[in-house]
Image (cartoon, rainbow, N blue to C red; front, side, top):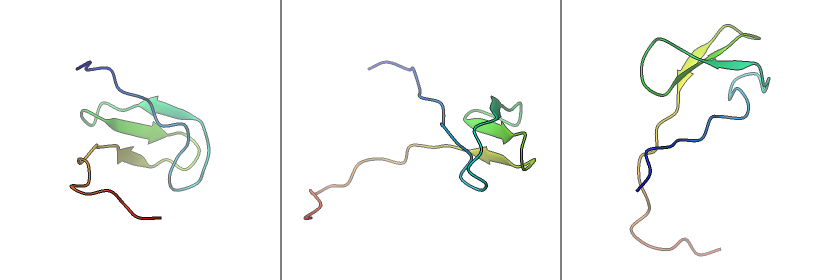
Length: 52
């Protein structure tokens, strides 16, 4: 499995696209529009299929 990760496309708080990687840690991103730092982490997959 590849260790490549996708970058977030927009800030989950304000919706702006002006994001940069942060030095706060692995997976951390800085939003230069609202001055927030957030992390993106993949938790896992559901054990069963979701019925729609």
